[in-house]
Image (cartoon, rainbow, N blue to C red):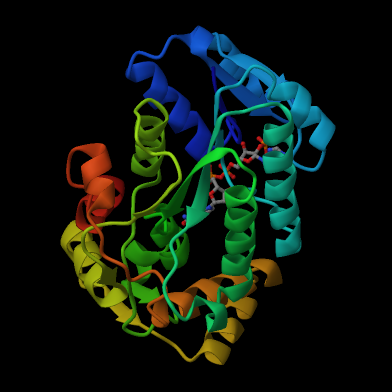
Length: 292
Ligand SMILES: NC(=O)c1ccc[n+]([C@@H]2O[C@H](COP(=O)([O-])OP(=O)(O)OC[C@H]3O[C@@H](n4cnc5c(N)ncnc54)[C@H](OP(=O)(O)O)[C@@H]3O)[C@@H](O)[C@H]2O)c1
């Protein structure tokens, strides 16, 4: 039995679809969900839905009974980053208690210097979770996933075609953006094949791109000149505040803008290509699919 946590979310639902497409029978897949209601679509597919919460170890021990392989999708808790670490440690503890054999964990891409980067707290949470997993005694596979291409849409906003401007404080930093569903596909492939025990994979794209290049892709797709401007961080905050963007989102945009500027997700690697058996979708193709 393979169990997928975060199964009602974007990544988890795609991982389940991929397992089904690859011929895993519905009876061989279970899903962890917080509420029955959120999991209606999964139940309709015949997937066994087990109710559990990352903040409640006992709920997960029951939910993980009889599971051989488990895909732990990292927590999306919006509060303090320590909540996420606690959630991961709870889930790993519960999996061990329930005699899960192999746990696959979705971490985040890391480069040297990450301890001092704009996303240091976030990275430390993954480092702590990875270390806890490695010491659990279960077989593990750590997927150091690259930054989602879908984040580009959030960073550029929904007015690019109107304004012809991308405003984001990433300077000339690049990142090796990846399509979320291809990361979910890679996780699915790892769950149904052998030889991944106690391995850590960096799952990024083959080529990194920055926002000057991204602006060129937008220009081509929208048929108009799109300019990229990287404002000073304080000016950027003022612009977002004036536009009425909530403080929580301003903090996140600034944090990710700085991390791209620092090159913290600029890591070109072919491992994802070999796990998918094809080249990952490029940013150019992603933008043409979404905006073309
Ligand atoms: N690599 C990147 O660029 C990047 C970007 C953003 C996020 N991430 C990470 O990748 C993960 C998956 O991404 P996604 O797009 O699939 O996120 P998503 O659509 O927000 O899904 C998150 C999933 O986690 C579940 N969840 C949240 N809190 C939980 C809890 N306390 N107990 C049990 N389940 C809980 C949610 O369940 P409910 O339906 O009950 O809410 C949902 O199924 C995120 O959680 C985040 O850690 C990575």
